[in-house]
Structures are given as C-alpha cells and as structure tokens.
Length: 460
Ligand SMILES: [Fe+2]
Image (tube, rainbow, N blue to C red; front, side, top):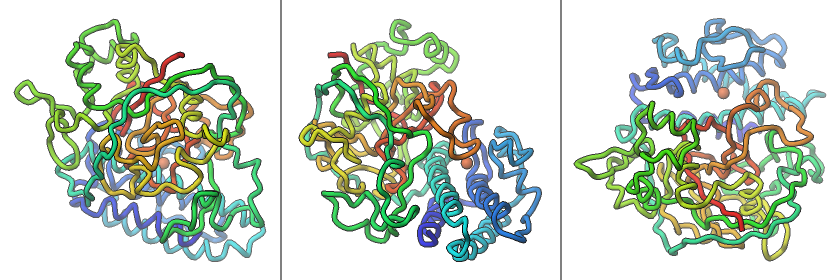
C-alpha cells in the first residue's frame, strides 16, 4: 500500500510539473477547477483519514479544510465550486507544503496500520483515497486542456499507427447477462485486502505490470452487485464514431436540424451556438481541431475517435445515422463477453491487465486519442476495437443504483444518482490500474469538456 501510495501521489505532481506558477490558480469555467485546487483537495482527502484514524493528529489548517473540501456536507462548510479560482491564497507553495506534510504523515500512518485491529478497514479507505486521486488526475488533464490546450508542454509520446482498417457493426446475441462487478463474491485468497498479483494476472496474463505493486482488488460500490439483466439481440459498432463520421453529420446540417435532437439538446445548440464538438474551430471555412499538440485539420484526423461531445450530441448523431446509443448492459456485454469461451472476462482481450499494446490509457503518454485500428491486440472476440481507452463512451443508461446496491462510502457515488448518464471504457487520461470494464463513469448530458466519445448500437 505504501508503494502504491507513493506512486499515485507522485504522478499527480508529474502531471502538473510543466505548469507555470500563474497557471495553477486560474479557473477558466465553472465546471473546471484550478490545478492548485486539485493538488490541495487530493491531500485534504487524506487529511480527513488522518483526522479520523490517527490518534493525536493535529489539523494542518482550518482555512485549508474550507478551501479544499469539494462537496462533502459531512466535512463542514466549503468554498463554492465556482469560486475556486477567485483566491490567490493559499499560495501554490503553501499548497505544495501542505501536500508534502500530508504525505509524510500518511507514510508513517500506513507503516503503522498493520498493527491495528481495524487495518482492513483503514487500508480500504486509503485505497479509496488513491482511486479518488486517480480520478482527479484525469480531471486535471481535462482542466489543463481547458486552461492551456496547446500552450501546455505535455510530455507526449509518438502515437501508434493504425494497422488495420476497421468498420461496420457486429451482432451480439441477447439473453440473460450478468451485469456489473462480482468481486464481492470471489475468493480473494488468504488476505482480505491484498491479493498477490491480483485477478489481473489471470489465465492469459503472465506477470504483474513492471514497476507496479501487487494490486488490491478494487471496485466502486456503484458497479455492484452483479445482477441479471435480459438483453435482446443487438448490433454494436466495431469502433468508436470517428471525426470523419462526425464531420459528415456536421456537413449534412446536423446542428441545424431539430429532427435529430432531444429537446434539451436543441435548446443547448441554440443557447450555446454549438456547431461542432468542443475544441473544434473553423478557419477559412475549414474545420480544425485544437489539442495538446496544436491545431490540426480535421481532414488529417478523420480516422480518429471523435471526442469532446456531449450525450446530447452523441444522441443526435446516432439518430441521424439511423442508429442509437447502446445501453450500459449492451456495452458491457460487448466488451466482456467472450464469444469463444461463452464466459465474461475482465477485459475485451481477456483477463490480463491493460498495457500499451491493448489500449490508449494514461501510461501510453499520447495526450491524445489514437487512430482507429491501432490496437488490434485489444479487440474483443467479436471484433470490437478500442472499448478500453481513447475516449469514454456515452451510453443511453441513466446513472442509477443497480438492484441491491449498498453504499460503501458516504457522499461518494450514491449522492449523484439523479440526472446523469453512464459512460464506459476509460480515456487516454485514465490510469491503467484505475480502469475496469465494469467501471461506471457519469456526467450530465450536456457536459463535454471530458474526453468523451461514443459508438452506436442498433436493434437487430
Ligand atoms: Fe474529489
């Protein structure tokens, strides 16, 4: 746990390392948070653990408790979300000192935990804090993109090339399907918290990831319990909708035709003057995409997944294309059900952990989507590509509790069970150890500063 803690905490600082001091405090929109806030808030989260479980712990600063609490009513008053960028204090240096103090305390605390009777419970909470931190690492990427985009000096790696031309849909047989994460029902081995090598070193796996500590099994409460759902036969796209596909929708007047849009979508199109995804710009009549590496012609990126679209836009495109978005159960069956073994596997390609040959996640270091057809090793037995990584994929499912849901963490997932849509699969900003095929991300239907795209489905 100490090693995992050290690695996850270090990565947050690696992400912000190229920032200049002025970049840390600016809030460019209500929905984003300044980088200083993220590095303070993720430390505040661990300070709540120390305050509760470390005897004699002295609160670092009452002001910090106020400034770095996000939305937790149980932890008292806090600054309004939209005002996180209205203060110059605490300074960035003070925030980093706070972070270093919490790390020092936490490392000592983790070393002492094994001697306690409540060790299992505390280790679970620390793991939760690390998963929380990884969520904020992804948010940092969204927020830094909104703040700086191509002015940010991201440590970008070369993107893999498309090695296979992939298109069309596959048919998936319906019937009863076990939706959700079953980790509670599994034999976890001798220790309740640390399972050496973890389940991600399954049958086609080999060794744990180099440099990564043995993984604890972890799943959010909202992915559980696994339960039966009935699916009709359906078809699903083999690949995410591409910029090229989406450009056709734009050129066909998609943003000018109310027939494709939900009422809420049509209202947004008119109120916000949407004409294309976020980060698309028109120059001399030509659509361009701005990303971390600069401004590009869409025509040079036709074979890449479209990103920064809202649920409202994804739905409109699907209707225009004579298709629909998949439900999350359809998405999960397509991603996890093995045609050949007729069982549910951990990932589209089998049970081994994600790596750079199978999908475009944070560790690939692309800071961008990859071309469609760049990860043949990551495909499902049905031939669906890039279900894990690149872009979170909108589903038509409402983010509501599964039948039998039990909240495991106060004010974490369950307080958001209204008005949001489920996204699946992770993006190029999601850490490899953070993603699971059963992971349910959620955002409001109009939001699009996240790295979100989609693939379509169809009734048979
Ligand atoms: Fe948070």
